[in-house]
Image 1 (cartoon, rainbow, N blue to C red):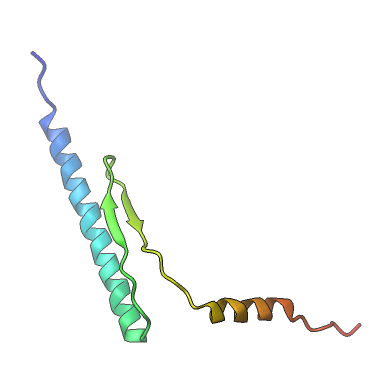
Image 2: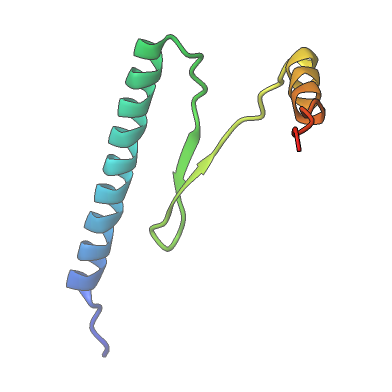
Amino acid sequence: MARSNFSYEKRRKELEKKKKKEAKRLAKAERKAAIAAGEEVVEPIITVDAFGNVTETWPEVEEDEDEEVDQDEEDTSEEPNPA
């Protein structure tokens, strides 16, 4: 009868926990920095897939149409170069 490789599974689970904990710590530090700077904070959804990879899913944020227009105006207004 085959034996399970318990030590491998245990180590894999420990590494998953460490990755998730580190991702949460970094996200918390970023949120604190953003709050201190007075910025609006949007929370990502952090998940760990079957392979132990940490992935973040950002919720869609609606932007003001005025901001997009201002950026377009800045891009199109070029100053002529004196030759």
